[in-house]
Image 1: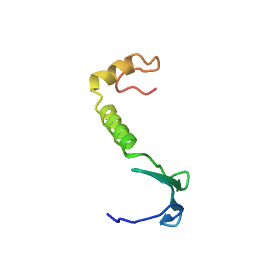
Image 2: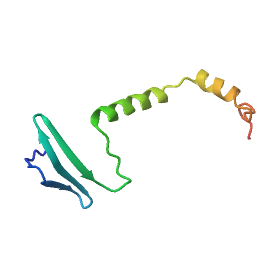
Image 3: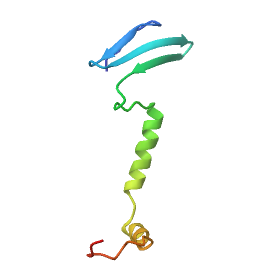
Amino acid sequence: MLVLTRRVGEKIVIGEDIVITVLKIEGNSVKIGIEAPRHVKILREELYEELKSENIKASEVSKDDLKGVLKNDKGYKGPGTSS
């Protein structure tokens, strides 16, 4: 891990298109600004972990659950048939 010391107003550049700026420091809290292209996903760690957990749960859907969903789909014609 790279550890850097910055003061308010100072920046860190990552690659060619991401800039992190220290905006404010109060006690144990640091407010930062992040400039990055729109396609770069930026999440707080706790939100990232929550989303990762939800994605894992969603991927663990049972075959029976999927069959139930398909049976309720009016366009579903059963296994081995094309729609």
